[in-house]
Image (cartoon, rainbow, N blue to C red; front, side):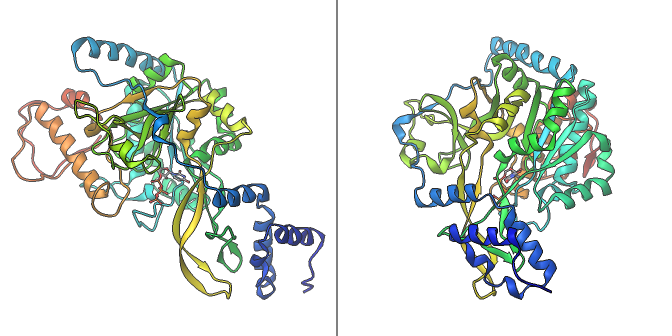
Length: 468
Ligand code: UTP
């Protein structure tokens, strides 16, 4: 077979030389024709302008915000008295009306690599529920289904995957009959990828015929939604609100009327749920005003003394952290996707298996991944609402294999919440350390619903599994 480069290939080779990336071709002549074609096709799709931007970012990283620029953001806090509760109930009615009028879609960002959890499948397949071992996807799916029943609405479910986990994710839903949601009401779309670079800005090979790439961050959602055509589908069907949440929080309220209500009342583009941080170093982005504008800044980007500063009453000055649950307005998503400025890029350093220059497989720490963050779209937003929610009933993240924010800690939180519901419904619970309990969102997804279904005094037997 003739291995001489054709005209298109010569242009590509020249461009790679010009960008100092020709090393990825050094061993191409050892590849058979299909492998060679695969590598060249991937290289031809590289956005060299973006690659230049990434290298500039490595050479001159943006400075972290200085403490003087950062103030606490105004937050719609949880009510503490009857008047406050009435006000919030009125606002929740706006959200309820929107749900009932079929203005809302649910969206899960599930394209991440889940490195910290170390689970060898997409994170949504992880068995999270304490007794039955239902997956995160099933658990969230049951919440979507429960919300549909509760509000008598369609609530389509959009799921963002990445090229690496798309097929396995779709296959999982198909094998499980879409968890009873209806295949035509679950819509997958795939986010983009970026090349992962060495510390000195060189492309890396994951295999002889494949560049090392990684998903472009949850902020990739804007482009991906627009590309997929789903944003038009929503607009056409009269849905102008998206309730957006991560795949790894089994306590998420997937269609929260109060949260939607605050967003609607403000006429916001993007709103975020927040809660009071446990400590200054809890790994949550901070809800702040930065240079006069609402923003979420990564905890690691805030100088330690500013993050730890306290008010005279002992509260943290920067008290509220984002749990990465958002409401997005559909026209806002369209605007961000169209905006040429684009969201900024952030770098994360991770360890990957790569091929070295001699073609040997090697584990390489410090590889640089470039990601966009959804919350950076706040900079494009005229109005926003930060809405406080109760940690115990809304936030049980599954990030790490062990310790804090792990499957164990999430299951403990789910169990504590259900024990609270049982007690408030007048059910006697044995004092035993951790009685096995599982309450499906299809049985009840809030204390209120639970009290309606569970009669006081009914003696439970454990394990207590309450399904649909
Ligand atoms: P994380 O920031 O926890 O990242 O994602 P991750 O990739 O899942 O896990 P680590 O950092 O490698 O351990 C938070 C949420 O955003 C989604 C994830 O799937 C998760 O729901 N996400 C993250 C994406 O959809 N795409 C991305 O590129 C990154």
